[in-house]
Image: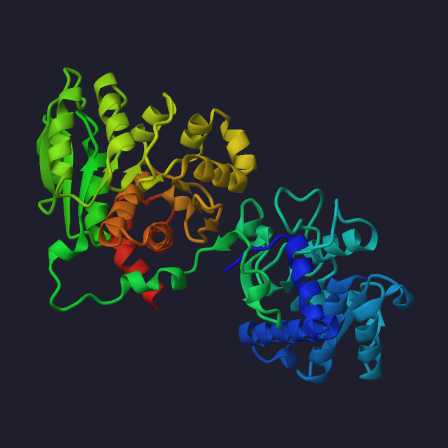
Length: 509
């Protein structure tokens, strides 16, 4: 599902009109979609007390069309329509919808009255995507009233919550607190990116007639299971473990065995046919004790218990029969380990997933030439700051562009973790993941993600975009499901493995 800026959406509307679908038809279709959502969520509307707040722009025109449909189609016995400007200030399609409302017997009011406090449903159509700067005047007065003056009302926002910027960044002023938002054709940045994605309530994206071909070249998309559902299809009854890849996980060191075990087990739970965890020899007995399903490979180690440079030959031998390499969790950044990581990242002709200490090693030196081989990096914002030589604040202030630029510059698939994790590709595409939970802010969840990415890529090395997107979506969805069961505070990283099967069922369904 493509994600559009306000300017891109205006261009889509303009091109739609050029195709012969006028704005008044799009506005009528938008009103239909909102009324359908209201009926779906809140039942027969004749039992509700409804107030529709309308501004003077196209968003207000949507509101007037919605009010007319509530009045003529839904039999609302208690419907108040508030207009934020004198009718003569309306223009274009908004003015036309006002005239149609009046012709049907509808009547607008211009001030909030006492009886409206018993309202049970509010439709916010005050300000749309054309807003620049904070809300002012009557719109600001009514935004405050919506937020504080209707204690029993659910609030549905049309397109965007009034006062909220449609693209990115914190609002300049006050905005409507939404229970739900219905937007049209495609979501905007504010619907899918932090910090505003959590402020729009339940989001419904409704088609109103603009052909998808008008925006197929947009470079930002929302991850949807339809993108990767085929990867979760039932397996061939005659299949065997050899068909589903063999992942080598280079992870762990003395005292840091849990990260290696979680990554390895996550790769198995994601569907890899075989997983071998390679680590320093003193760490292997502990790693093997976590799960009998894991194969292990002891490596030469330095006196501090880290993987030594002498392990490189053994790793190269192991990789001859493995599908891919995932490395980094719990590995440490000792000099010998760094030499191994750098050499494998630069020279291995198979896919490599790099996380945690592997990223810190890469950030500390000159970037290696990987000769176009597939590389997947999974940094959190701190690791991303080190990779780019910037600060966490700078990364977080421009997550999409930061991820896009790095993926294009380094020719990698970049998974920038955090609220609304991003997957950026070398061609400039960025996919936004809508799943996840604050419960996942606990040690080890990144190690599990590394393993899930490795497990999906082991099975589908020729479909890396879909495999990585699936891993990120499933990881977040498992967190949502688990948090609902355990609570956010009690959730731990291995709970992701418990709920990953349910996440896969969700995606298939």
